[in-house]
Length: 296
View: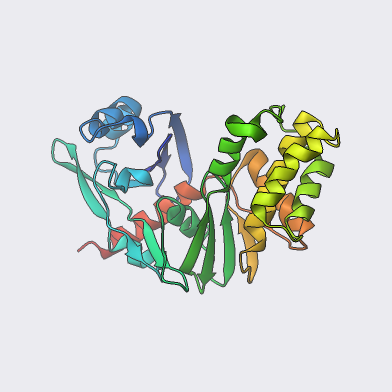
């Protein structure tokens, strides 16, 4: 099969063997934010046209923002609680051309205790790629971090935190931005980061804590780079402290950000595993297999 994780800013395609092994990967900057509804089929041909031609019978499964209202075709949200079989039953068909059909995985919706709705697209496929049968808490850090409760292998609820977006805004605009210097490479100022994590658990609240980035710079208590890591610790600390973690904790992410969250969990006294790479490919394969078994 061919699996595609198509988000707002990026395109990731996987050619997957019948046993689930990833045979080939392709990555492009062709996110949906830069496309119109008439562009999608052409972009697929540009990026993986040779795969489609070489494997005319291969199932094609897409997940992510490609199924949003702003995407190729809206795949209606499935309401929690949801298991992988529920998603396999709700795949949304889309025409590739020449009579070939692909399917889009729907996103998920839920409501918190106050009745406020939340949504995700793409993360559900990564989560089901982990194939966790029991209870777990899943953390998917990013621009809009997701914190997901898994019970007996089903997603029963989740909450979104706009941590990455707020961090980017504060780094690039306004008063705080002038006090910060860019991060260099993967090196983390652990002392500054942990100082931010510690502050997030003290009185004052998030907005007051953010202002301390400015005051600590004014009194030369932090360098510009240290201040950036201190701000990161404040935001991630506030994000993690308001989530009810239960069971095994798994971080779905890669690179520097996943390691930073793992360090934050450890500082807060929790062990967290980092999921293997290609969770999205594994999830697309699993959903594709389930869908194939349901096809008459």
